[in-house]
Image 1: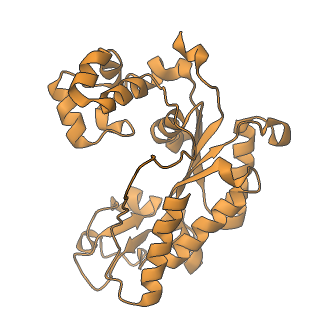
Image 2 (image 1 turned 60 degrees about the vertical axis):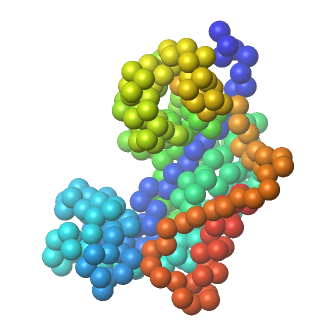
Length: 287
């Protein structure tokens, strides 16, 4: 019954498929759908990590993000490309500018280099229903950047993100509403598939007898708050698909400091490269 009192916004979580590999393919004039591509931090080090892999590299050779260079088969069709972080960031910024053609800047929240939230509430008279609008956007992204995308649509950021992660990456577009929570969200297990739950928290919840999102949703709120404090309250409401956070919520008052970390592809020694990384972190923090 509480759902009828919640805002029905039109929030989209947009993800660029195989972003780094696709950008590298465009840069090298390759076809991402036909060429096995591995983004490697340092091609001279056999232990270098695969930072990104094209779909065909995953399907044909079983090579995925996190594998090592020495695990990649010695096949002449595989292209090894070192990352060009400044190029990736420029493409990311251009994508944000592209989205700005459909919604004002304050309706866009850059979540990461390859993922953004968009508030389409009130744009129906301009572009039509949200699903139709996203079709326009996806087609435009492909024609302009040669980048394919997937998106989840929901009444809040949480359900939009879950629709993306749990369904849209297989279907391109997925729409979740509050009415879908029992059928689509509650069966989700293991718990680490739920946005915001990592392996450590999952283990703690498992020790409490909670193994699925449905178990979490039916755990008494008082029990979760006693165990986790304010985070327990959030876990309970997220398990019911409830998220009242704003797209561009202001920083917490009286916050005296904050930090942002990033794992680098390699050692950065040149001033230009260092400034590129700082720009990327600054862009995300100010989004």
